[in-house]
Image 1 (cartoon, rainbow, N blue to C red):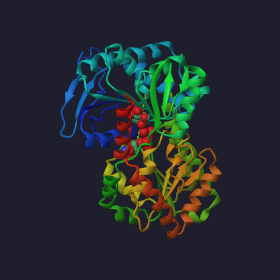
Image 2: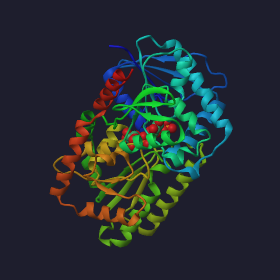
Image 3: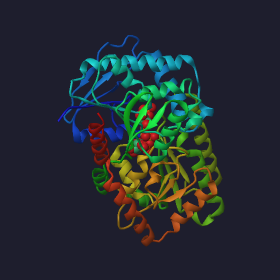
Image 4: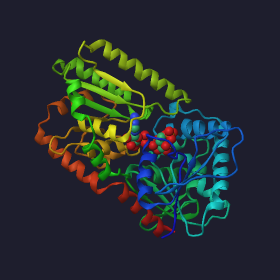
Length: 450
Ligand code: ADP
Ligand code: G6P
């Protein structure tokens, strides 16, 4: 079996990773082994011109450093102030600057130059996410003819958002150098096809083959999953769940997200406020735990969302709290996975209401963590990729606080029988389509594509 080389910006070198990409790839590399290359998180003024290896029992990791200027232009700038907002439908939050585009190209070229000497002739290369769109083109320019696949963890923008990019045609030229393009949902695949048709040259061929900017490749949908079996086990054996329940006295509603504007956290706080305004019967009976570690804090839009959410939580608590009850508890740090699993299991409601999201693994983790005899209810945004399959959740419009508040009330009143019925359908999907299924399907398709 040839070696798998995974390349992504984020590489797990510390504890408690938050972010779907790292969580999923960690689970998948544990099964397949291989080499995972990514950014070290270090920004010295003179980075080494080689990869640093970090051997591990299950797979190897190798990292590279970036200069502060490269990190700013490539990661904070082009990746997270241009591509991320456009992929999440927020052209209003972009910060377009020619230095960012130049830094993005420069860093991708540098990563390719660092990686190319380590590639063996029969390696399969799997590149992840929007930070590395140009990587295949840069590797090809350095003589790498190996199969190279790309998987996009976040939504692919439609033509109106692609058109906001400084050079949309370039994006499709970069993508054309892969052998397989993977997307989370049919919606993303349709957006890709339409954007490429309008802004570049895409000719559909037989099956999932296309000709893009003159090169033949394949594209398909590969909805990502979680390591369901081990998450079920984590939740089942989580400590202190009953103790926590008796401490709070109220039913718990939980939200777990990076503190990102795409996650719709202020919208869900407003919906909760509306629930408490319209349903006094829930006062002291429901308490909302939002766990949201800050992310990309140097980017202004992320500072704004932190301020907005803290302000809102303070206002709602001020309006409704009693001596015995704090309606919203807001935790700003990552938690160990077993603690998270225990909290999900304890929560009567899992609130997953992004305004836009590639898949959303939290929705799947919440379902996996439930006690099958007394499961909680998932409230899920119709704009999460997960909603394409998880229709037995209470599917809501995250922009509509009234609909969300009523879904919360419905979840609180739902009979155990209905909760079990909905949960068993959701769980079946999360068990069948787990992270191993996802990576095996992708890697099979990559083998057939090259
Ligand atoms: P995204 O990839 O946009 O962050 P996902 O929901 O797909 O969104 O993935 C988030 C992942 O990060 C999940 O596996 C979740 O458990 C994890 N995560 C999010 N917040 C925390 C936290 N506070 N502590 C630990 N893990 C977290
Ligand atoms: C999402 C993206 C990943 C990213 C993660 C965390 O899951 O798809 O590429 O790693 O968010 O964001 P960060 O910027 O901290 O890596």
